[in-house]
Amino acid sequence: MTSKIIHPHRLSRRAVLTGAAALGGMSLLPRRAGADQWPTRPVKLVVPFAAGGTTDILARVVAAKVSEEFGQQFIVENKTGAGGNIAAEFVAKAEPDGYTFVVGTPGTHAINQFVFKNMNYDQARDIAPVIIIARVPNLCSVTNSLPVKSVAELIAYAKSKPGELFYGTPGLGSTAHVSTELFKSMTGVEMTHVPYKGSAPALTDLIAGRVQLTIDNLPASQPFAESNSIRPLAVSSAKRWPGLPDLPTIAEAGVPGYEAASWFTIGAPAKTSKEIIDRLNASVDKFLKTEDGIARLRKLGAEPAGGSPADMQAYVLAETEKWGKVAKFAGIKPE
Image (cartoon, rainbow, N blue to C red):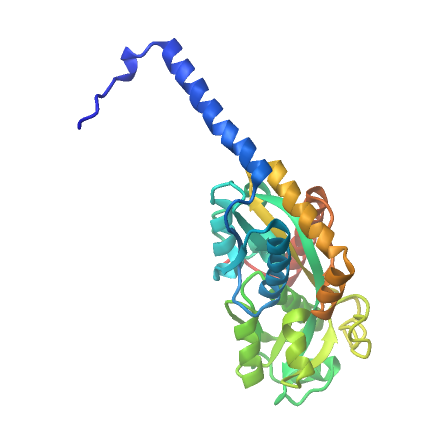
């Protein structure tokens, strides 16, 4: 059966407008209904790094809880590469129907714009804030074969072997990357960056001695420190971490004024309906304020955050300004 082609000039203006209005009404009605009924099928939480890292761990904790509450599966999908840009771009360009979200980091939301020349998404324009899941410090750790047991000894050793030490990170633009570059700038040591596609492979190589140092997220690093697979030297936060009271801060241990931390968020494609964003925000925020939620995240080495989408937006803007100054100070150039 062949279809008849009607040329646009043969249609009356009134017919076109009437048809457009009808189509508009048809498209709006399901969208409004969908916001009320959401989710009616599995939802993706896209993680920018490999399984086993902090972003992935926190995403799976949250996914399990919201799956339980909404009675619909929230699936964690790992899309690695380009310091998180591949995942963030995927979500930025996804259909804004409430079924695709990104678990963001300082890299995807604040730092990458200072590290990468070609960005195919604009975080402020293309990703709508949902909620901050948690904030975490980084753990400065070395491979067990390195003959240092303190930050001061690390600095002295690195200065005696300029450029010979390798530090691993989950990727360009990660907080591990800028945190270590800040450390280098403030101490005058020279070390070589080895970016990976996530914390897990970086830590695997730290254990094996293929890299000598990481200043990576505490939740990813802590299990290996506790099992003595790597040697923790200090935390990156301004104050000692409650879960590790005997471990000094980097500032205490020989780098006065040093402070760096990471954070993890949920973001949506920019045109996702406010109703859906608010529903997901309320669910996650409620979990983060429960005794169970607080205990589970603190056990992982994270401090629950929460708050409104507006709170997340304001925080990301402030962090963008901060890390922009750090990138300039550390001499990080877009690659």
